[in-house]
Amino acid sequence: MIMLAFWVLWVGLIAAAQGRPLVRNVRTNDEFLRLLNYHKDVTGMGVIVDFYSDGCGPCRQIAPLYKNLAKQFKDQVVFAKVDVNRNRETSGAQMIRSMPTFQFYMNGRKKHQFSGGDPNALQQWANRFAREFKENNVKVTRDALEAFYKENAPDKATEENLDKVFLKAGDKGGRGHRNLLKALKKKYNKVPETEKRYVPKEKSAKPQEDPPKTKTKKEEPSKPNLHLASLEELQEELAKRKVKLEEELEEQATDDDQEEDDASKQFQIWAPDSVGSAERVVIVGGGPAGLSAAVYAARAGLKPVVIAPPNGGQLQGKGVLVENYPGVVDSTGPAVVFEIQKQASKYGTLFSDEMVVEAQLSSKIGTPHVLKTNSSTISTHTLIIATGADSRWLGVKGEEKYKGGGVSACATCDGYLYRDHPVIVIGGGDTAMEEALHLASTSSKVTIIHRGSEFNKASVVLAQRVLSNSKIEVLWNTVVTSFQGRAETEEERAHDPHTTAHGADQTEPEQPLLTHVTVKRNGATEEEIVPCDGAFVAIGHDPNTQLFKGQLEMNDVGYLETKPQSTHTSVQGVFAAGDVADAVYRQAVTSAGTGAMAALDAERWINENGIIDERKAAEEEFMKELLEEIGAPTEKQEL
Image (cartoon, rainbow, N blue to C red):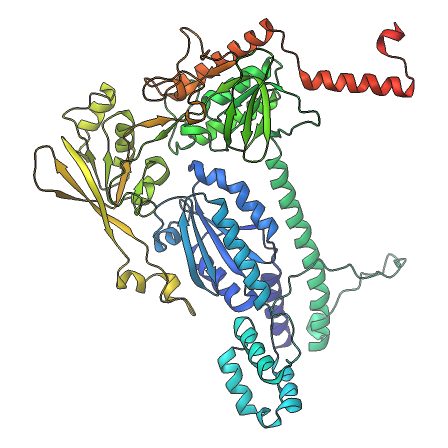
């Protein structure tokens, strides 16, 4: 029995001592529920869960911030992530309809949920959970309360009263014990002795070792005879093994963190120098156009700077195989973007993962253009604009409400959430055709709603593939008038693991879910209902040129105008590449081609106008002054 007790304790120790990574990857629904219950019952820390997908651009964009928050609030807030592709049980049980979606739990109860990459909201909830953990990380032991009552209210120091108090406040500490202390303070103007409910494990100091003994050949290393040991000796051995195990786990966790840090440092990050030197080439945009320009400019020795969030443009949202990009076979869009980023970085490209919020373009050669980002200012002699174009929305009733609950603009990001469910696609161009064909491979039925009588904006091949697909139906001459849905039913709520788990909140907020759209046919007086669980808006794009309005020439819908057979815009030293200047093709390969053109045009412009590398010149001047100060001969003096 003693040996059995030892091994039970040892197994429990291994489970308890497992090093928790900064962001825990939750692979099963059982693991998800255990995570919530553990931190409800043991630590009292809040849990933030990121539901994500590798093929989702916004998910990749918010991931570095999420990890930084996990570092900032380590041992105060728990950060977890669920890959909706690998853990369908949890994402299905939580009715996740869009990525990224963040859920926030405290004491096993869901306090909040939102979809989209909102760094401010994440920071606010992390701050709130950390504050609550600090305030509630307290515990009053039964002995401490009994001693307190014996001193201040002897009539209450009875077993019956103590049972009553701990039944109400709980026996695990936390908020109930915090409220108990408040009540005692108010009544007696003092409180009993307390201890922390949860103390994060720290790396144990290695015990001082005795000098090594000289062994003879016959001498065997000392090993405990566990089968002969008493319970006290087993506990002592267990304590020793605990120290060793925690040290090994700590070293392993450190190695894992180092590997992640090394991976995050594979791209060189731009930082301003002390004298504010102007760059020779700055590229705004991180899609195929911007990155292709970066590769060409970097190989020309121009040390370009790419300013863009790490979402990689439209190609980053491609969660399916890339089939029409030369030389790429069986690869996803995010993988293609990542490889181009590595290639650009290899040749000296610098990256800034920020957003440009203001641009001041210069019409005078030699006077740099100035860009302001979220936190810095960068000047440059040439600027390549590769900001792409954003998806358009309908702007009808319910569209905003059901975003994250069924309404989306990216089938490749969210389509697999509607496997074996009916969906609709709104639009009639190539984007709509591609979305419909992608969804037809997984959804039970796809209905295209198009306001025209033919697909005159779609390529013939794609349109034919759509019309010949038995799972796709087309509603011609029809428009969507509203998105409609419902909240969770009582039955759904009854099977929601977070409403059935012990201590879960039974009044958590309802999630609006799309069930249908209302449509109206041309000339009709009444609306019709089209049932669907997912709706994908694919009605075109708006070029991201707002920063440059009034400074650069554009066409009537906002696409940048370039000079014939070049990427030159209407301002000297400013070039345009990709979808931001292409209202016709809008393909990854054409964007990459114009990116290369823009880099070549920029290089030629720099050479023609004698633009020097100001950083290098400043460094050389500094070294010259330094050598003169210390009296060392300069290169010319040596000659």
